[in-house]
Length: 244
Image 1 (cartoon, one colour):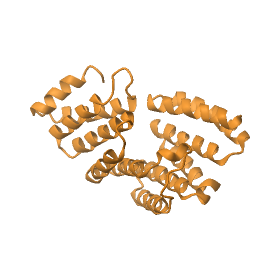
Image 2 (image 1 turned 120 degrees about the vertical axis):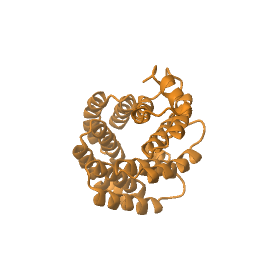
Image 3 (image 1 turned 90 degrees about the vertical axis):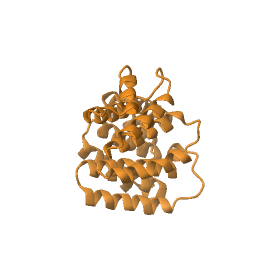
Image 4 (image 1 turned 180 degrees about the vertical axis):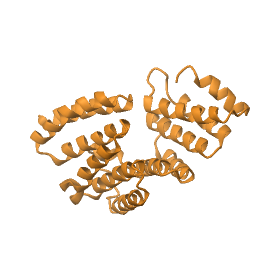
């Protein structure tokens, strides 16, 4: 019963994370944490710490995010299962990159890669099943972006997009938006605009993820800052004003 209640709170927290509402997410997780403790199940506790890391990252409290990732990677579950170890190291790499610790971040990403290579070929049926090779590449792109390595970030995302099934519309839209952002940060404004348009068309405006639209808004700001007159870029800037 405690496990079910904790998982329900985590689902509510993730919905808040997707809506870019980290304070609401934190409120749910503050309820989930003691429930996971009462459940005495390592996976329930690990899931709470994962979402706490994401929530702290959205609030730009990267030291807190790094601390949450430390708990993940040092958990008994991570010591037993390389898939959990890999995700813990990847979350840690992301937080360290945002704390401007590139050497430590790259070391953590290397640990994540090595642990992922030891995982079973068949994905588990539990909550962590989302963490596939496609997701590994997508999270790697986030780390490269935080490190300012935008070309490397861009190179990760086509592999992710090719591997994600078409029915995972929200994920495809989110990672396409990040591809657009990586292209804009490399000065490829027309290409970024075309990719951004493709990302937004994947989502219905009424049900779109705010994580996606916020990423696209960041892309638009970069394009606007260049004062480009390229037709593809100009038309996308005008088209996107109404939703961001």
